[in-house]
Image 1: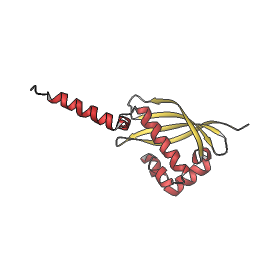
Image 2 (image 1 turned 90 degrees about the horizontal axis):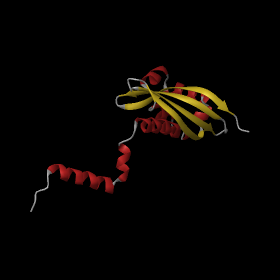
Image 3 (image 1 turned 135 degrees about the horizontal axis):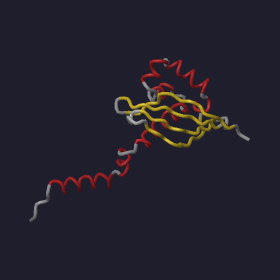
Image 4 (image 1 turned 90 degrees about the vertical axis):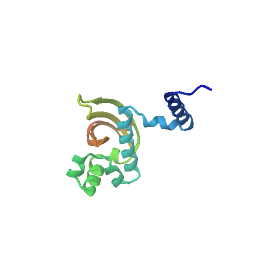
Length: 143
């Protein structure tokens, strides 16, 4: 009986994991996908009125600048479509040369049916992408 090389056994184990848990492939995401995921999770937290959850996706810089209550008030007053959104779509995501900073363009439609174009500034902190600020670039009112 022929002996199976150890590297071949490893490949078979990987193949078995991929077949039994295809969602495991989601763990190997592109940087664009990871950034989109963070933004989506924060938007979902805002929609659930979970501002402490949304606050966790903010960068250290934002958390040092705003308490949780200040963050909540700032988002509600300055970014109503982001605070309560119906849908969003991602545009271009660009990375700085050092790959630890990025910018993501996102069109967000609020419950008021107004769509805003937002530029999210992202920063890599401790191996995770965090939101370091949002600039509203424009808005489209419903007809």
